[in-house]
Length: 348
Image 1 (cartoon, helix red, strand yellow):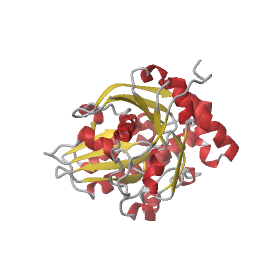
Image 2 (image 1 turned 30 degrees about the vertical axis):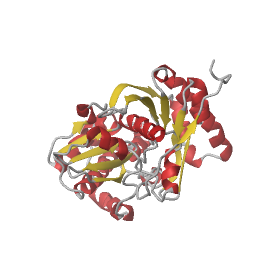
Image 3 (image 1 turned 135 degrees about the horizontal axis):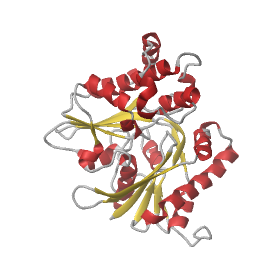
């Protein structure tokens, strides 16, 4: 079966698409593409947590149209589409809302669409996140070594794949979200390319200690979070831009490394997500781990397509009726909801 996964994460910078072949042996990423959102559209997505009901309703259709139009070409090669949608709000274990109308995507592509994965896990008693571990196990597990797979998107998380078959996964805190917010505020740019500005700065250790004292970091797994907690109110209103970015980079590195090492010391550490492009952050993580980090590309999963590939596999699991929520704290559950395409004027 060939499944197309669609993912727009908390960074709201664009759409990642991955065409995955699943069902025989290890799944394979056949093709992947990404589309960057225009600046006005990205601002609209970033503003969703504070939007009115009317604005969210309209955005639901607009995001569905953007997903559907971007996916048309790759969708021709797929049997089904798995769409994560765009997160509006996530309350761990209670509620999670993703929008990007599946009916519109189905109408534009002519393919069945599986979406709304997180609510099914919450209904089964889970956090609603992280959901990527199901795919990580299929892509990366190795019975001979312990592997840690880091995802550095807007929020950072880790999947621990033990050689004994044990799987642990949870969010560790901010990934790129605070760094990008600081870049927008101080640099008037969408992000700090390569961490270049942060590299010139000095860490404010007093402020760092205050941040690290936040009780969420001491919460045991299973746990998840989002921009609802790690929002722009974390960004200092004063300070040298380079110092603020250096301190935020250190926050991401320490929280990700310390919580990963609490699971054990892995033989290999793989990285996916946009944080792989931040060389200053990666160098800081390598210092904390004491070993080089490798991109998920080394296992055949492009670093910028890992989450899209994961939602392709979640859609495959839905079709096969396979429970796909592991390490969320919920009872085993088949995740998602199916939308069948019907003829529509939108397919023009």
